[in-house]
Length: 250
Image 1 (spheres, rainbow, N blue to C red):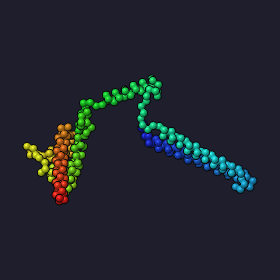
Image 2: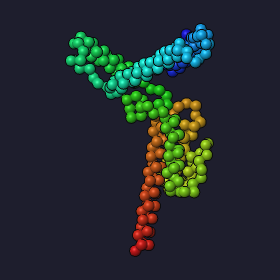
Image 3: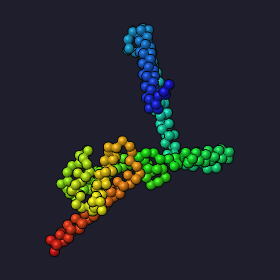
Image 4: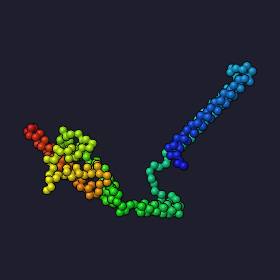
């Protein structure tokens, strides 16, 4: 059977405590009312006037209520102050704080835990679509990393071409960034880095299998080349703008 969570148990505990306080308060008020009515019925004049028994009963109940509230408040303040004295930061246990056997046992258990954690780390394990542990690609999911570069290149391209068309969800990169093609050099096969980037994105979007490390690396090389070209164009634009501003001022 599944155990309730910590939040659920705390919620149930608060409800039970509230019900206990409510029931106790009801019985407290009912007993007070019954005793007051009994005192009035047994008085000679059957009235509140000069009925000292009713006054004593009411004063007694009021005193008990005040003392109970004071004790609850005092207990709550004491618990809060004690919790505040507990250090929030971690302090290592030194030899003088505990007996020697206890300190040795703690040290051995700590060393054992560290050894178990180290030996439990994956080694020579390859998961399809993920970087190998222990390499610079460790923890990187190739498909997600390639798709995340679309927004970065699009934002950088808008700095060069403010009228760049809006990005559509399933648009080919070769079509969406077609205005960047004249700025990119081509290899001996007549292909630019944008062609290789488009192939990597289509692979990440449509193919059922996960991209390999080589495919991911080729796509990221294309991303780096495109971003470098955009950065150089941006620098040339700023430099030209600065020179025009200086010429106008002079």
